[in-house]
Image (cartoon, rainbow, N blue to C red):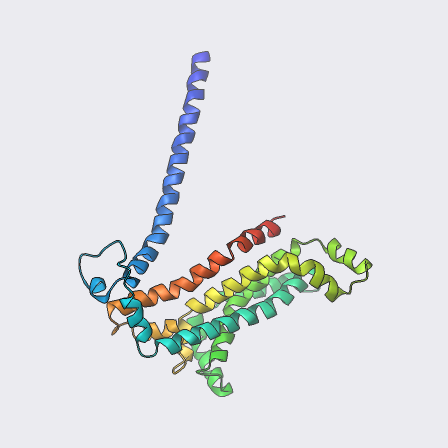
Length: 281
């Protein structure tokens, strides 16, 4: 009996080690799956056009800015890049400006149809954008918003707003209302209590929501292709010229599209961690 128990005890650490090994192997494969394409983009973006078109491909960048210079000097790229920045910033501002008050109201007030409203906010993502493309195009033409950056920002805000509402709702729910009530008893108004007590705690979530809205707008291509002609964003511009674009332009364009999202996420990573820490209290 003791021998059987000893064998079972010895087998348990071995079984646990095998499980840890396969878990770590899966994590490594997942990381490589995500990072390897990004590394190839960076290698070709920082290599000369001759190296990009040549074969075999190198796994290390040359440190040459030829492909990026070719991309930035390509006709229409600078304007499209500026349009993408403007639309993404407008989307970020409108998403937070509308989503944060909605999240606060859902967290702090009880009203009839509250759960239905939350469901409807989430259901706005259930309608595929291609299905709404034709009605949106007709409505924008009638209202004069077609081929405008503000009109495109409105569409992108519609895409990002549900996430902004739900993220800020979870954050406000994680902040005890007793903190605001204590501020009220000390002479603060509701707005003053929000500004002095709630706002510093909600800042990580606001930053995360803003970054998420920016990335959604920056990477969106379908609405930008359908609703704009002259004022195309960078994604729509690259999609339009994808068939006739040389390889250096494609690689450099892909790198430029990925880079802002990576930078934004890197800058606010601590706010993202803080957001989940507050939300899971």
